[in-house]
Length: 475
Image (cartoon, rainbow, N blue to C red):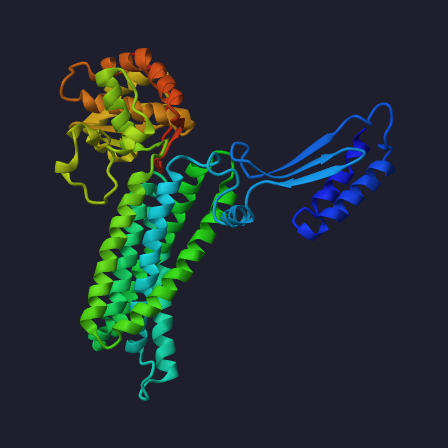
C-alpha cells in the first residue's frame, strides 16, 4: 500500500513552477495508472487529498500546497502568498527552529535590546578606530611601518595578558552572576573604545593609553563570551543551544553590517569636527549602556545563585510562598555597584553574611574551641558544618559532598544568618527549620520551574572530618 504514495514526493518538487501544472496533472495520471490505481471496483470512486505544510514549529504551521487526485483528474491549489513563504524562509536564518516554543519567553525582548546595543557599538567602533589609526600615523609621511606594527603588537599583547589574568581571578564567578558580568563586559568595552578615541590627545603616552584600552576590551571578550554561553543554555527549552547560538551569530552579523554602514556614514559626516565626533560617541555610549541594562532586566533566570536564593528564602520564611523567576528578576541587582536606596528591603543582602567554602586554616585556636567544636556537634549527619562568627556564617563543605549537599548547606546558612542576632539557640533552631521546612521549600521551587540541582557558586576549599571518642587516660 505504501508504494502507491511514492509519487507524492516527486509531484511536490514541481509545485513552485506554475507553467508545469498541466504537466503535473498528466504525469500524476500516468503514475496512478502505473501503480495500479486505474479505475477499478475498489478505487474508481475515491479521491486522495495531499496537503503540504510549512513551519519549524508544530504549533506554527501554514498550509502552502494541496493536491486532490483521483483516477480521472488532478486538482492543484496553492495556499498563501509567495512573499509570505519567502519571508518565513528568510526568518529561519535568524530565529531558532521551533520558535517561539523552543525558547523561553524572555528570548525576544533580550535579543531586541541586545541587537540595538550591538548596533550602537559598531557605529562607535568606526569613530574610535578612525582616531586610533590617526594617532598611529596612518596617512602621515613621517610614520614608519615598523613603528606602527610595534605599537599594534604591544596593544594586542597586553590585551591577551589581560584576558588571562581576568579569567584567573573571576572566571569561576561568571556563571553565578551572569547578568552583572554582562553589564560589566559592555562597560569595559565602552571604556576601551574611549581610550582609543582619546589616544590622539596624548601622543607622549599613546602606547600606554591604547594598552589600557586593549586590556579593557580583553575583559569584555572573556566575560561576554562566558555569560553568552550561560544565557544560551537558559534560552534553550528543547536542548537546542547550538541552534540558538548559530542564529544569534546570524543576528549579530546582520547588526554588524548595518552598524558598519551607519558607522562609515557617521565617520564621513563628522570628520574634521571634533565636537560632532565626541557628541556622537557619548550619545551612542549612553544609549548603549541603557540598552544593555534593559536587556539584562528582561532576563528571568531560573538557576539559583546566592542572591536569588536569599530573595527566595526570605520571602518563603515570611509568607510560606515561593516567588517565580520573573518576580525574583525584578528584585535582584544587576549593577556591579549596589545602591542601597534601590533595594526594597535590606534582607536581600542575607547572602552577603554567608561565606561558602571556608578554609579551616582560617580559624585560630580560640575560634576552634569556642565556635568550631561547639557547632560541629549539630552537624554529625550532614556533609557540612556551619560556624557563626560575629554575625557571619561560615560554611565548611565536606570533600565528599555533592551538589545537593552544597545547596542545602547554603540555604541552611541563610536561615542562621537571618536569625543570628535573634535566637539564643541558633544552631538548634536552624536545624529544626531544615528538618520541617526544607523539603517543602525545594518542592515548591521545582513546581515554579526553578533549577534545584545545584547552586551557582564556586567552592575552592573543602575539608574532611571524622568523629572519634575521647581516649580516657589511666593514672
